[in-house]
Length: 287
Image (cartoon, rainbow, N blue to C red; front, side, top):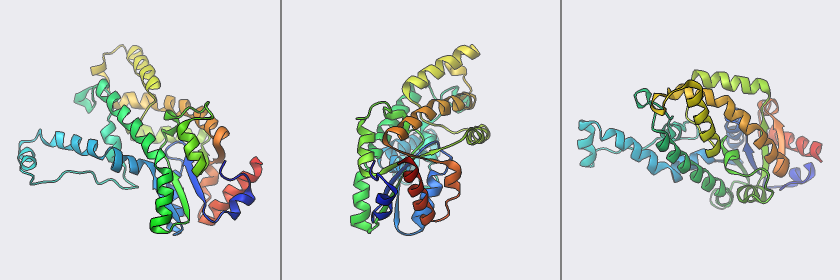
């Protein structure tokens, strides 16, 4: 690990941390607290994905839909209007909307092969954005003068790394630059995430093998054809399985490369000093 003890951590004048875990457990909220203190640079992996690596895909998809409307088609062809995504740290909807949901097009779904293609694009984009972390640490210091750095990752980081491989390229690179911190949710937290997701299901990314297995099982269980799938029903049905699939992968990542803090401990953090104290206590307990 980058910091081996609480003393190492407290003595470090330039602290670098990477947060990972399920979406909805406080990674971005905690990052915002640190950024608002003025000394922490907030690197959002999802924002980097949407602006640097998938921005063109997102804009082209919006233009493709606009071209279906005669009035907008004429304006686009004459370069009279501009279409782009207004992605922010707080609003990453353009990325999830582009990913889409597989199933019946009449219900807002896309063909499963197109869904798989977009999933592959996202996988490549997330890996590249994660590997950009070191560059942004240097950029934050040299360009803006930030001494501290917080990397706010997406929930799908565990899908693209091999938690059983101590030489995994992505995790090795990240651990060299940052203290790796897993925000672990309890069963109660997971149940609450499922409840929220049921109310507002949104697209997410899946490991290819997991997606193939879930898609086949869903079709068989419901005895339906791919173009008959209700997109929202499929991703609701898949969500809890996806969380259960990710939990042991997160745990292995933390065991191999970092430390674990509980979600309730994160919720208690109100200031940058609270965060520094939490990390120090966790390092001390691990030692």
